[in-house]
Amino acid sequence: MLLVYDGTLEAQAALKRCSQLSVALSAHVDVISVVDSITANATCAGMLSDLACSSMEAHAQHALDVAVAHLVNLGVTAHGFIKFGRTVDVVPLHVTAFHADIVVIGHRVQSGFARWWGGRPVHLDLAERLRGSAIVTVTAPLS
Image (cartoon, rainbow, N blue to C red; front, side, top):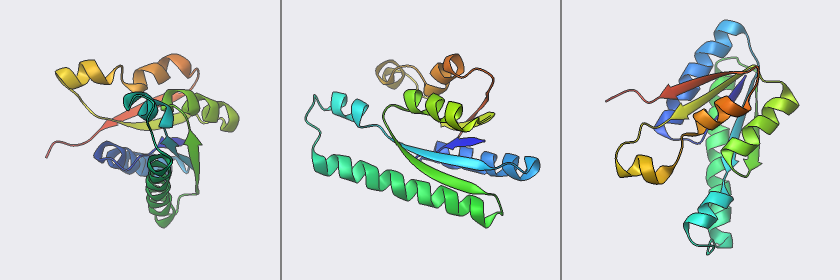
């Protein structure tokens, strides 16, 4: 099982669902946190600083540590990986290398301008790229 985790509310909901699934299935979990400096660099017109990249990596490492610790506290065998690149590119590579049958990912429901500007949701691209893996898309509960 593979959990894509970035610390957002949606990722926290995905972590909870992944925890339930992994305990029920006695499954090992790989957790990846993605540092997407490619998209960040494009967003800021190529002016992304080294400090910003380091900050992104530190944030990803912290999020990864939190998720792995949560799973380990539940008795789940979990390993964390920092990946660099676009999520839609690095997830299929990890799935292929480690043979993950289930991919759990959080999804933020967007509306209006954010939907147009933000582009296509990652889970839709993953559905086209991942053959033979189930994708569990989790949204944050409404407050």
